[in-house]
Image 1 (cartoon, helix red, strand yellow):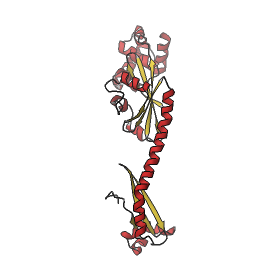
Image 2 (cartoon, rainbow, N blue to C red; image 1 turned 90 degrees about the vertical axis):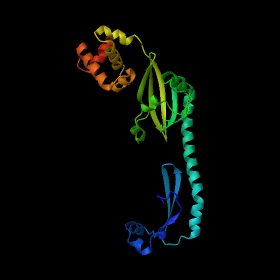
Image 3 (spheres, rainbow, N blue to C red; image 1 turned 135 degrees about the vertical axis):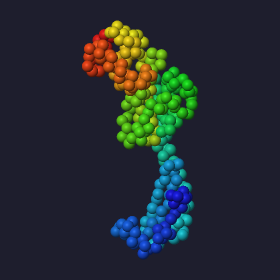
Image 4 (cartoon, rainbow, N blue to C red; image 1 turned 45 degrees about the vertical axis):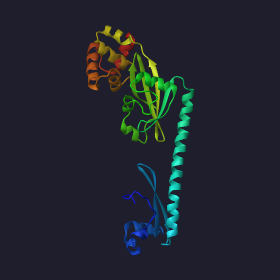
Length: 267
């Protein structure tokens, strides 16, 4: 059934005599609950999803008419399952889009696990256009830089934390914060822009820091992790570590918390 991909209704008696079935481990297990025959068929409900349905009887009394009925029902059961899935997805998207229509500050995008856009409100389109101008916001796929910020392992995580900040991007003195969550088979991305003080990093140079060290310290004081700072400034994680080592030496501090306090007091 798996190798042929057809999923036609099959009986145990099609490939195994009753005496052989009694000796088979699976047959012995089923015999304990009074099952001596299965009629099994498969529903192809997606490129990578199969659903097997097994009908059980205490005796080998399934007929060719039973097989024909099961075969007749297969496409109808497949369609019913797909309709149920689509209905659930439409409801989920509807709930999100209802929120997005009321939101003036947040951009909301609903995308599948391949990055295909199912819904994108006007605010999200504007933010995508500003921060990822290489693609039109009306395209059916999320911009590569935005989609690559999400870990493939996270997509498969059954207990992914809802709507936690996953990435930040910077453009023309503004920061875009992107949070993510899962609804059924979709990602929901919430995009929010925060204005930043363009002069804040340069003011920190007065502490004896280079321009890049001041930028790193500024974002550290804003609560960003090293990986987030690297993404914002377009440098490597290792380079951020080196700049922070220099910042700590210059300021005479020993950790991130102390450095952040100095930056906030000075700013």
